[in-house]
Length: 300
Ligand code: PSU
Ligand code: MN
Image (cartoon, rainbow, N blue to C red):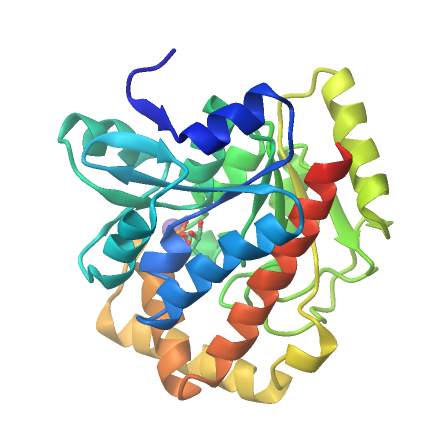
């Protein structure tokens, strides 16, 4: 066992008994949404997993330890603390050695989930290849993690702050199956359409679970991406979101935002520009993803 890894009693017994468990990330709480919506959402997501018969395992680094399954007090700490660190794979050793606390991105959450024996993970959107990556080389570690860690991630696709076409190309290079759930089109987070097709469409949790099992039987150690579009009634107006994204990208450029600050900066600017309107879609799509991930976890 790894003494840097503390798994809650509830998650430990569920994993040991082979009951359904769904991992949840914490950067969405600390850097993806403002307070108090972040706290309300994080708590609600756990209850959605439970009412879908899965045990939620929210993951973060607390005082130098990886925690799988957080207390309400820990979730509240991540929600209210405006200076919480954002940890992807490369940050974990330094943050843990320093006894620090940090929220985990999709890449770090996948790693920690896998260490804890959890194979299904729900989030809002994953990171990807940024627009202009030809110059900046800004490609999220979430993609390389999907290429090497055996966890299935349910997301509402990727935001068009990214280059969606290049993100899909890169996932192909890394050998990551991309499945559209109930759709032939890869969704763009706030909207159901992106103009890019998925390679495979599946329509039931059982079918997804079957693919996860086949992948495991083949001994493939990479992850898998399940793209689940935002529900029709909560999708955001495409023209408005495109304008907000263009404006946010301009602001990032003129402010000289770089590296790991880019994504949180763009997310907070989009929330500001849409006067909080985009947040509603964001919350609803994550809830939707947690419900689906729980259903899949119940079939694996
Ligand atoms: N995209 C979103 N919401 C988010 C993130 C991405 O729509 O909250 C967060 C996730 O935690 C993701 C991280 O793993 O940002 C990616 O950061 P970067 O682009 O710096 O790799
Ligand atoms: Mn980046």
